[in-house]
Length: 470
Image 1 (cartoon, one colour):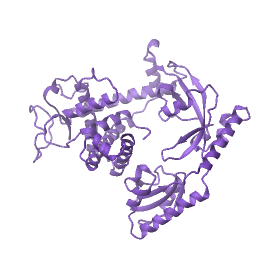
Image 2 (tube, rainbow, N blue to C red):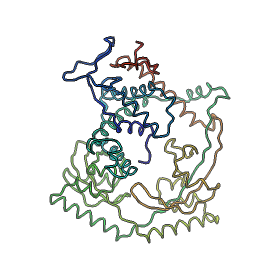
Image 3 (tube, rainbow, N blue to C red):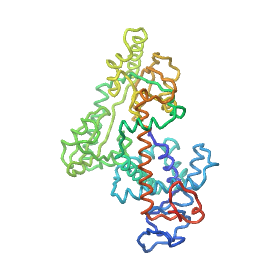
Image 4 (tube, rainbow, N blue to C red):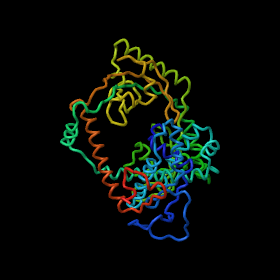
């Protein structure tokens, strides 16, 4: 996965490394003073090493040890980070997950499986193979690993959905933005780092009709095999090039509003339950689509994706085309923006003259300190308005193309200016208001949730009132 939240990865690794979380276990309390207690459960015994319980979730002492270990693995100095602080963070996440369940927030198994398969692909890519991955995370076998990873990801998604529910209702007015900005003394105004605007032109190799026909024929043979009794699930695992769904047998859920490409949606909704499509062409390649279940306006489908291969000759022609476009730009025959509009094969950027959109801010400016390494390496040596040589790139599915890069504008680091930086100031003001909403929610939920902190950890000075002033 190219966009993985750092905090998510931190807790992912913690959980996988050994967070054998028990759900709704009976906890033997130190004292009978808690105002809200869970209903008695039978057949349960005290769990050794439990340092805290939040609703239906527990935190083990070993969880904190593993959190330290993961921080050290990421070269984060841990000498001055107290155990109490890490325990508080773990309890905070359990509070969100617990109330997500209470509020009937649903995270589907398909959604969890999709994320889990991406994570396993990531681990395998970096550790070598599944056996090395299992050994690294000290698990008995791949089944145990997948089970624990599944539960951890599900709880993380519950936490994210609960947080999203809290802040989705938070809005901010222009007057509130003005008041936020006015609350700073001039010398205390936020500093915004150096930024740049970047544009690119993408040239994709042309796929020959011969290569397309090879894929179509292969998918037709797979369809025939399935109709004669073969498993669609097994075929998807073996042959689908969609890594996100392939390991779960190509499974997807969709409705008419799902953000799938038009051709895929039209083909899926033209089929009856139990039917398999002929090969369907989209920008990603060719698909076989199988309708497993129709549930009202929602479809449960499986698909197999295969993409035609690019020949060396086609790749060479794409590079030559990119070089010719660069020569025209450098000679002044055409501007970079006009060349992007007329020649680029990337539909997301060609209409804006090739300008890249920052996925974090949805603006065209990129802060240098937060620029992705891939983009930074491509433009770091470019002067203003200079056009890079053709750069060979490879997408998530292995597709190759050439791109030309240009730095359109640079912006020096500066103190926040209300007119120039209104969008950024609004973002900061909204985040502050969201944090206040989350704090208010947490205080209220802590009061009416069963929470117990055991042993020496009761002496901690937590940011939240986990001890309820006891």
